[in-house]
Length: 384
Image 1 (cartoon, rainbow, N blue to C red):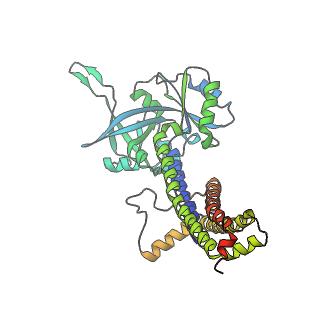
Image 2 (cartoon, rainbow, N blue to C red):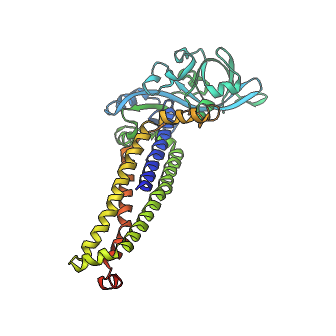
Image 3 (cartoon, one colour):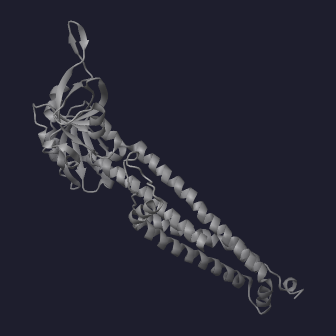
């Protein structure tokens, strides 16, 4: 019973922590990314206002904002980095992302048309040794033709803000500029497309499919799960493997249950024989041991589920207590972006784990019960 309880509790806690990490990373990622992007294959969406009016007809859409998406090199002194540049309208951006709330220094509203300001990710600013008011240079991928040959197009930008999303990829490789400045710098005639925010981000694939059927024009649509498909596929695979590995703990406990019941059958052969001579059928003998094993499985699962839920809900208290007692830190702020152990208990996982534990316990009773039913009264009582 204790073995089953330990396996169930461990599985619930581990999967809850993995769900917590996935949710934390996803939320930090979506603080910068939009839930859905609508764009044209040509790289420009001239009539984006009309598309925005079509988009809001879908009740799932909370907000939309135009954007310019491009890549460039950012240079300061002798430091050069590749960067994803996103041209935005500061007054519209809060409708589709939480970038404004992630600004640590400066303001997003300071991105004004014609001022050529830039908001850098925290890690990118640290690598460039750039602070508020400093100048950085952007080099466009397309150069310009001069009598001396092809030379890169450079433009100086002033740092007006620094954001920290808590996701290394974006903090170290993304920057925001005003959309009109982006169009001028990259010589675009219109924004790249629209970024959308919906009421339930988990329904983004479904909403994207609906938009693909209703929007007019030759538009391409992608949701956040498509943009980060490799990452979420890796997390799903890891979670599945952890489930399989930790289920082996419950399987070991089930084998212990088998051995316990086999020993009980061996020890109670005389009693089984007496019951058979009094008229008990083989099936009634099987039921005795199956009920005994099933009760052990049910009680062990119930204790494990209760303990697992309790630990998963209070892991933010338990882990700091253990760290304080042992004088260690499991997640260092200098190494990991997340310094606390998150937990996200999902009831679907709890029901699945509990069901697997009960089924394994029940299966473990079949062989011992069958063996008990096969005891022959004459042979069992011969030496009594």
